[in-house]
Image (cartoon, rainbow, N blue to C red; front, side, top):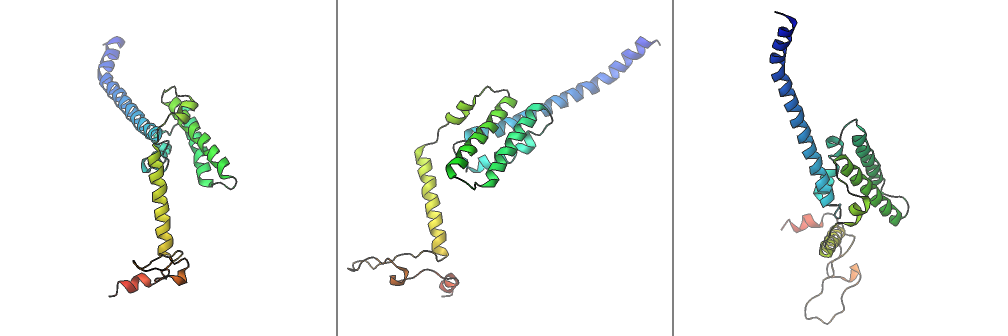
Amino acid sequence: MNVANWLELLAILVSPLVAIQVSVYLANRKERRERQLAVFRTLMATRASKLAKEHVQALNTIDIEFYGTDKQAKAVLNAWKAYLDHLNQGGDGSVEIWHTRNADLFVELLHEMSVNLGYDFDKTTIRRMSYFPRGYGDADTDSWIIRKGLVSLMKGERALPITLAGQDQPPATKPEDMVFGPLKPGDMAKLGDG
């Protein structure tokens, strides 16, 4: 057997292994891209509703799904680190300045993700081209007000004004003028002892 025969035999034995490895590599690469696209889609879809559970979950998977050492992966991760650092600071100065910086960093993050995934979105498109119905904002605000009111009521920081129907009396304005004053620690337990 000459060298050419040995090489031919080696190629016959090795080629299925190489084909399997290439196939596995391509499948893993496709799966990773799909996960990255899912994160990007979620962030784009919820960019006008940043308190949405899906939005926060997508942000928290960026470290995993965009992990890499290439230039584009590093750009995404660096944009994410800058945005996360800003979110965790909470803002010591002006609220308006904090919100402006927050929006800029978020747009930068989405832009870097779009470049990484091969999309050609400019920053203006990312910033301005989303729809959030006013009713959603009103509902969110109402829910927040109701939750805060109930919490302060249950903590005894606020009182629930109660008046008897059909009575000609002005509504109570101070806790001591009310039929029932603010709840104190232990009051709820007393109500359940009946």
